[in-house]
Image (tube, rainbow over all chains, first blue to last red; front, side, top):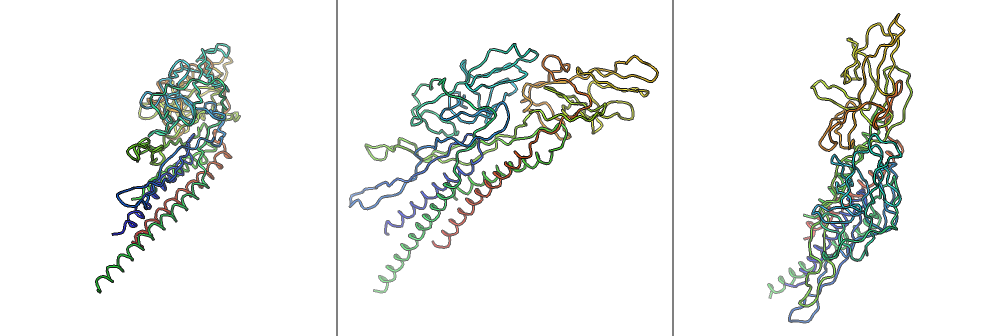
Length: 248
Length: 261
């Protein structure tokens, strides 16, 4: 049997994987702080004892799109967005430091400062826990100041500085839980960057570009159809060969 | 079957839920003491199809792998406890809390419900009750010959009776506060219940220790902003359409395959 059939089959399969990546981007078009994923195809030569004439396609995710998403005004004093590059340091489900752009903050029953996904934010003194407060203010520099319950506005509690970092984007990678971590797990946690500023009363929307996702979707759809057509052609060729040989 | 089909299904579900939230907010645009909801989404887990750094041949490595996301998940809906605007009604039993705090309502099942809706009435026994007829906690009974009823900013209810110039003190309205009001469970009827996420209620006196004042003759409007909700509705609708486009694209691919092979 001609190997063209298998090449077309693997091409179609890789197209469906690419399709899944774009579908995931579109499904997260309204996830706060979401970073869309890029996909690309790579030609992978599989060389045997014969002439190297065939290469298979392979879909891969080279990186995520780090461009800033739209700022969505909420007017809620605990919604914050990072201006430009930068990340909130949060404690990931594994207890290790991870980075996210989702700044829809709230305080849970234990006083922990968490974002919309329930991940605790890290401050200058480790994970942030706040005492009961009457009002809360998050400044442009990421300083959380609270007015404890029953105190006058003058008696503010010890402010907490949120850990905001700006590591090299090349070194970051999206993990299985959607949080960003260093690609090399041996890298020490990023140092806080005092130059990062926050915008209060806004959340950052998803940076998914619907137009480009839908366009890629169409392109992949048609490419897939071409692969299937090719499979059909190979089938016809084989049928013709069998028929001719059978008539001999 | 195609991953894309299931991934976009999660997207459709999420947008469907977002629309429910928006429509509920809009429906309650003039509900006294209503607090708007916001749907919070997060990306579902990612599956590693091919590990980055795997060998591509005996002495070369792949620079990047393939990690495919599996869609979107609703992390939850969050109640936004911003204060609504106060509306003056001049009704003696209408009360609004200006600042932090909730009124306590004795529910028929014996539990305590919490509300920001201060539309109170008097029932046939003279007890102060909410719109549904559940008494305010601690209970306050208003005598029959009451001429004028006054509620002070710190929640003291006083009445002047016919023929008696000195006001009588009828009781003290106590309000409660929660460390995380967003974690309260809304049960309808403008009432919230305590949950593990909200923390235990702290009972206090209005206008003391950070509790808001009680304003007689005023009601707190819903904090829903119509423009915001309508804009949200547009984005929800379009995202829904885009996700359904993916479903139909995946469907076409499968159809094409079954027809041609």
